[in-house]
Amino acid sequence: MRQQIVAGNWKMNKNFDEGVELTRGILEKVEKPQGLVILCTPFPHLRDVGKMIKVRKNFHLGAQNMHHEEKGAFTGEVSADMLASVGVEFVIVGHSERRLYNKEKNQLLAQKVNVTLAKGMRPIFCCGEPLHIREVDTHVGYVSKQLKAGLFHLREEDFRKVVIAYEPIWAIGTGRTASSAQAQEMHAAIRILISRKYGKAVADETTILYGGSVTPATAEELFSQPDVDGGLVGGASLKPDDFAAIVAAMK
Ligand code: 13P
Image (cartoon, rainbow, N blue to C red; front, top):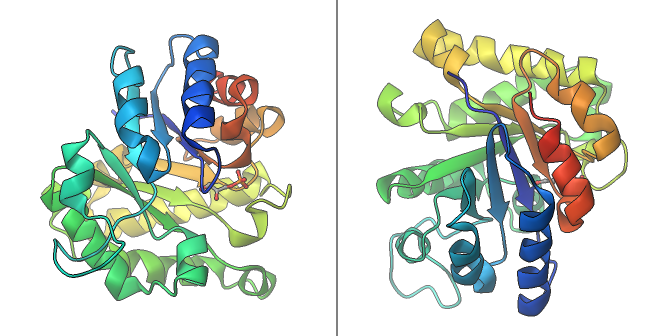
């Protein structure tokens, strides 16, 4: 069975006390989620948020990034082992903001995927095209390259642990959501690619999330698409009422 997931990516928002408050609000508002709820908090919040959500069924802890090397002289960096040791279960890898601002390339992302899995965590691997690629209608090929370079080196057993998030860059933080038809088109294309590489059974079981200005107003229609298995939510994950409404839209 394919897992339905709504993950909140807080990005660089909320100081520690505000993060605890937000978690409290989310725990209060979200009732019996149909699928998994993942809170991807900033690093300093992880351990405490993890403790707060541990008692609640279907809640999981996620990080937004980590370093690709296992350990060593990398001042200021955080390793996969460190994350796993405070209870992190999912790690966002290859978010478009990191690809853009931190120049993270596919080869490096493949390494991050490997380290995440090696420490028993599951990558939420992000892909998605910029506007100029969408405008010339080469978005499927663009995303296909990202997946091949970042994920398709994995053995089937490891690939099955990966969650994919399709986040068209032009829809992130812009208030411009992809239409449900645009999301479905890409999600179906991604599933076909997976099927070609790992077979239909694996493709059918892979969770593919949509991200990019998901709101309570758009979530239900997006999630009702056959190949959209939930969302990776930025702005709306910072508001307990909105986030709870998006969680409630899971099918
Ligand atoms: P928004 O929901 O704010 O557009 O952000 C999407 C995103 O980047 C989630 O990772």
